[in-house]
Length: 235
Image (cartoon, rainbow, N blue to C red):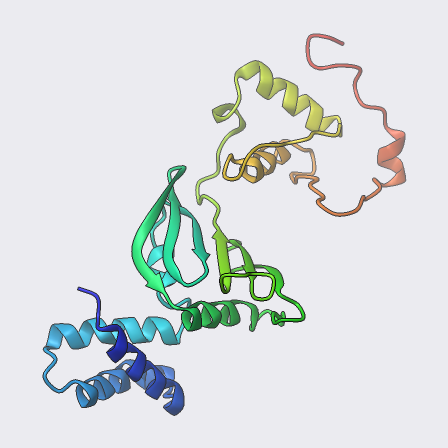
């Protein structure tokens, strides 16, 4: 059972005012909880300690959501329910975040990165420590309140032949190794980034040449080399 929201908020505010150290955080939360709700049983105290600790460090209520390896995207569309993508399907969780909680999450993400998000700069793109992409939007650009999207990547490397038939995989391998321009398109969550990263691994240098902004010229020696005339079997 989820802890009482009002009680969680009161304890959380007192923790923020006192700012206990990391070593005594959970003990102090338990003490404050018993002071606020002396009739709460041990299980209730433990649940509230977990809830307040999650809101105080890390990504708060989203920590438990992000701990699920099947979740590939987390969407917070303003105050209200949290949505996730699992196995390509959108699902609404029994988790609701208020406006203050969403604002705190956004600040907790962009603050350590030295980024700024406010009314004069209401849009931020960032990355978490694990490489997940984060997009945050706040008013006045977000009309219904602050929004947050976290896009994660699979931990398992996908081989090129898992997403393309042998002939197509051979053609793409030749195109990448020949330094041809390859356009990867598709809808949200279709696997564009995963595919491009995997295709880039067949490059002799072992990396993908993805550029979303601007252009980068290849070294003169590389420009001087001419690619093969065609894919395998058609030269």
